[in-house]
Image (cartoon, rainbow, N blue to C red; front, side, top):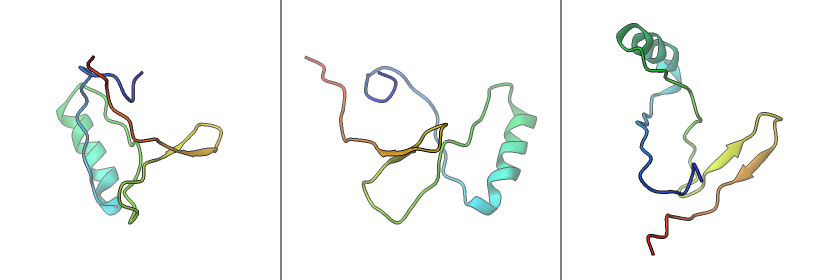
Length: 68
């Protein structure tokens, strides 16, 4: 549900790998809200891969919220 339902919002940022640690440090200094690294960009357009806690990888299927 977290990936495909509607009306749930999060702010997402893309930051170059070399700037990730400074970005997270600046975020934590400025805000009480948590900031987490959730992935990285690749050269594969339209492909979203999920890396699970156990190290397994899966490809996220394209889907959206069905309003009706």
